[in-house]
Amino acid sequence: MGLKEEFEEHAEKAKTLPDTTTNESKLCLYGLYKQATVGPVNTARPGGLFDMAGKAKWDAWKAVEAKSKEEAMADYITKVKQLLEEAAAASA
Image 1 (cartoon, rainbow, N blue to C red):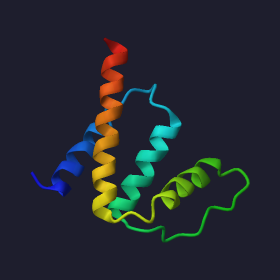
Image 2 (image 1 turned 180 degrees about the vertical axis):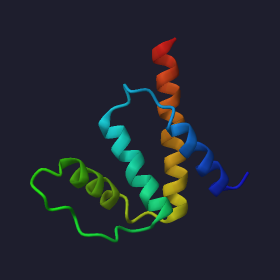
Image 3 (image 1 turned 30 degrees about the vertical axis):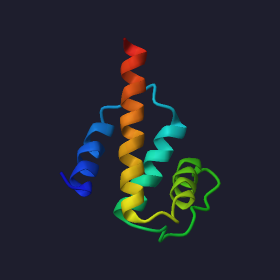
């Protein structure tokens, strides 16, 4: 299986993460996903006073923009695996 296929498989698995997954982890995944699929940030940072979620997502993406798409895919896969293992251990 190639990197892109494995990435897509883990993107689907990420949808099954429990509700207890921290916002920090979700933002990490978001940033890596955007970097892997879009590349470096291509939008302005949300400026609305009440758009805290938008700003947090943009910041998470901006934090990983130095990574290549391939690096971001590999890091995303690693993070999803880690979170799934943690969730399995917590429910055991």
